[in-house]
Image (cartoon, rainbow, N blue to C red; front, side, top):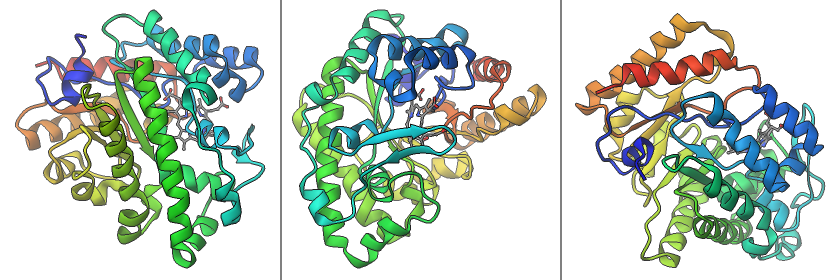
Length: 350
Ligand code: CP3
């Protein structure tokens, strides 16, 4: 595959800086909202391979994106393990039966992703048929820590008091849960690789809520475990991988020890500073809010700054995948998104 995104992730030269956007298929696009309505709900959309394929392709029809990401959600894994998931408008995801005791951990199902998440595998196989041949497909999962947060908190959380009660009072029981979730995550990603994804990404969205030592013990350790299990299962085909810990800019030296090719960074760390902490490819790091609130000159100014700081700190623009520092917001203006993608390509031409 002739792909600037894959070349950059593997630290090869590229003729420009590739760009894709976290949550590039989503509510900021009217065609997405229409398809979601047709599906009936967000979860029904995830579980319908034809419609999930359609919404994955929508942003690629509008914009010159350098990668696609299969349409799904990180929370389908805990659902397959036995937790009941629903999405309520305005409140985000919720589990009706969150984990409250060690018994709840014991009864979690060991998943067979080919069966329990067959609809995701079908979406991937559809996409491999329908994507332009040089557009790579990103598969993904939540990190064990981030999934455990939702499984114990029962939804989004402000202070993470429920899971932190386990961190500080029952760490050995939390480790049992994280072990189980790590196996599910690794097996899920292995199945995605068999179905045809070109790269995998681990979203450690809530790693940044931990102290440094707790991050090592409860998140980093299990990211490593997932990556090792995948490597052992597929010794002969190496699929490049990206790890994104939101808020992880302070721990890049530690994240650099992981067996992955790229690290995502949010917008809080300067990319030149990040470059000094790790040799891996870097993915980021524009503040997503800019696409909702700013105009073209401001976007151009921010893009120029990120590209220049990266190039100067690295002595070359290679090794940088442009992205947002977190998912795109529903209020993002499609015209701004189109401009962002074009200006990154234009300003980064070698
Ligand atoms: O990037 C893509 O286009 C692929 C799709 C994707 C979604 N969720 C679709 C989605 C991906 C990669 C995710 C990952 C995900 N889901 C994460 C990790 C990334 C991150 O943002 O930190 C997390 C934490 C979740 C859990 C989740 N799913 C939340 C908190 C929400 C509600 C957010 C909100 O803005 O309301 C979701 C719902 C969700 N996942 C939507 C989409 C497009 C919006 C649902 C809708 O259409 O109403």
